[in-house]
Each structure stands twice: as structure tokens, then as C-alpha cells.
Length: 99
Image (cartoon, rainbow, N blue to C red; front, side, top):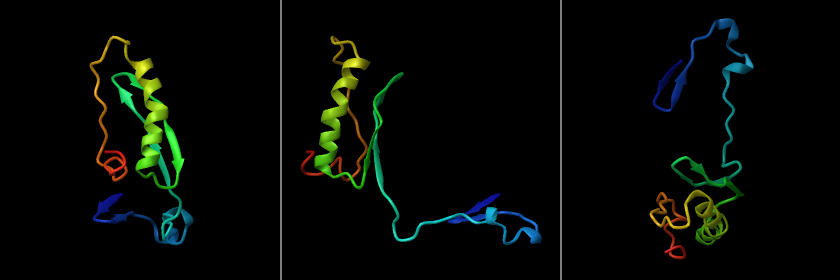
């Protein structure tokens, strides 16, 4: 299988030209949308929170408020304050509401 820019080339026999396994299904015009939030630290894994639809700033803060405190309690010793919360720069993470 060869990969070009935005294309995948596959070698096949002429007799296989119209076989279903030669086609990759695509959804045009959007399709569904889910959002997934998770956290980790060293060997500890936090909950995987799945939401349908888009996540805005308010939803992101709600996810953090519900999932993060219990993860921190379970992942770190109560005397260990040497941890840092980081996120990527997704639009919902840097919204005015979150800041």
C-alpha cells in the first residue's frame, strides 16, 4: 500500500476492481460528533469522559470539576502538591469562560 498526499494507492487484480473491500466508506457533510476527555500522570490513568456533540468552555469546566479532583486524590499522595494540570490549546480550553 502506498500513501500519497490525501490519497492511498492499492495494488489489486483487475478482477477485484469492483469488490467491496476496495472502497473506503466516507461520511460527507459532517456525520456525528463526540468529544472525549481523559487524564493521566505517570502510571495512573484517569477516567475517560465521553460527551456527544461539541464541547464549549462551560462544558469543559464541568468535565474538569467532575472528573479531575477524584483523579488527583487517587493518583497522588495527599502531601504531594508537586503536580501540574496541562491541556492542549483546543478552542474550548482557551475560551473566555475557562480563563
